Amino acid sequence: MQTGKTQNGTASKKNAPPVQLPSDFNVDEFVSQRYVRKARSKQSLQQRVSDAHSNVKSLGCTEAKLQYIRTWEALPELGIHYFIAKFRNARKPELIAVSHNRLMKINSDNGEATKSWRFSGMKKWHVNWEIRHIKVQCDNEDIEFKPLSADCKVVHEFIGGYIFVSMRSKDQKQVLDEEGFHRLTGGWS
Image (cartoon, rainbow, N blue to C red; front, side, top):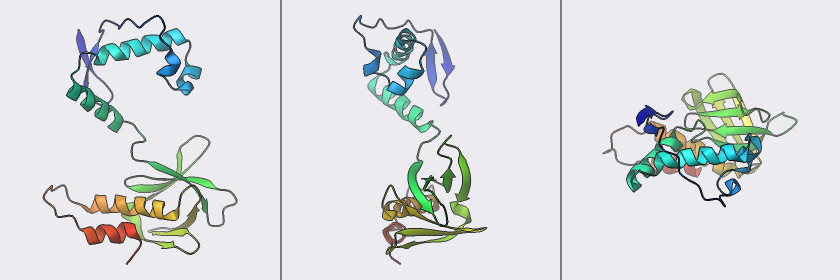
């Protein structure tokens, strides 16, 4: 058998003998409806399930978990959290995303970021708890929005949490600055 590299850099076995699926195998129970609708046929999906199973059936429990985690970490949208928000002076609600290093305004039609504000360029942010607005002051502009799909505290905690994590060093022995963490995520000065 040949071994190759998958997208996430893990070794995978190619040309493994396919697993024989039972005759009553129902693809709908294993695959999202979105993929069932896009597939050419259910037989092609069954073949893909069989091939995928044959590539992992010989792995031990730990190796299977590690491969799952590596595959999950390789997903392009890992760690991005989406919220519906209304920007100041905007006519309609828009999609905003918070990732580990930036805020993004997302085009809801195609899922692409139309505007991005990096945390490294952020001077400060403030939450007006009375009207539930978040104001972010960046190097080149100020933005203000009101989260509609979640409480503004949730968005505030994501921003503060990601900034806190980015400030920590890679040193595993670093003591956790609990006061700094609560200041960034708790909404108190």
